[in-house]
Length: 512
Image (cartoon, rainbow, N blue to C red; front, side, top):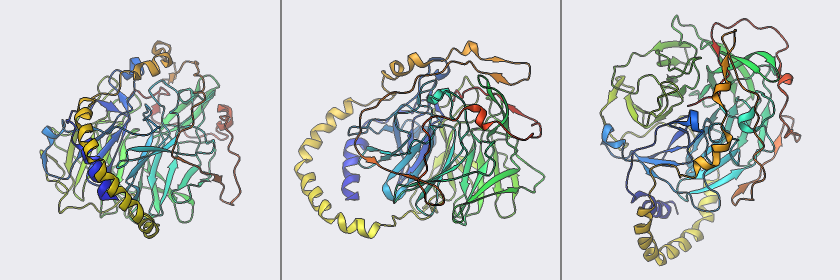
């Protein structure tokens, strides 16, 4: 069946003309089979017109190519079926290889818009179908971090809920949200300190296959009032929160090196394949400017940071970008921002064996990646799926032969439908959701105040096909009544004093 789907996918998608990618930040990218798939993000000018992207773009990296030339080799993947792509940015996104899919959770919809229509969704890149996953009235969030474990479960932590996703008050949900991809059951593991949240951070799974490490980002430092919300502070990169996925237990570690990355948010992190070393790339400071010390590694065995000095001419400093390992020695750095005014539409490939930028990428052949965040990339139910698909494969082949003429005819017309940018009606979807940026101003404390305008709820949405029903349980097995009403900001007010941070993060909404 997969071979047939790959053939059909090539006929419909692979034959269209290649184009450059739009300049975006706050999107997501993953590797599935031999292609990088990127979704969503904030477009250029998003700070002033509130425009985000709903496009799914793919780049085939199976064969060698010139990096500079390949930047124009993107093709758009057009979803089929009743569920279309939402405009979205600052969501969490992971690959689910055994399902030929990626999962997207959270996000702010279009910039200065309400939340996407469905909080958690899955896209199959072969069938080009979106499906929804119940979140059982969990608080809608953005700027969280998510990884997929070796146990066919997705782990999501942190984020913020505020007016950008329809909340009346600002809150920082900090339970670990765990989605079992087999049973589609969510589990919540409470974080020990209910008063402190985390947002704009990154995560990586250790080589032991069970420990997740969370790096940097921001936390709600001090409650001001209901209309202002919180002052945000940068998290010290030497203090790392951990989560044991087998014991469902929180922990923390402190790095021991003399070198420590400066505080940062909107960075990326992932374990280098075949090692127990994490690569941290990029990040922005409290003024939405890319940090200058943008590349580090952390040995998770020794807890030693090492700063990597890279030559000019590559990706350089940026934040709200994506990072994708193609194989054991090559990592793609894609898109992002350097400041509020400049977004990138490029990508660069870093050779992590030599710490040099590649002008020519060698391709995937003979250099397969050692699986990382999803070390066990096989479906636990592959045997049953294989048997149950036998009839479907036979029927699919017969139907495929019968439809070849129609497919061939359709290709001509699909080429004409090629779009290099998200659809023009995006602007209509968000034009009435724009916040007046002139109402955002500096106060005397050096932090940034936001206006008090709130958005209406996104309203009723029609029933959509391919809907995964899920239920929410607590660690004791009981069903959790997870209120659909957002917690008031005062409910998360810190109950104890904390040390004054040495860097403040303005509580403005990300532009990239």
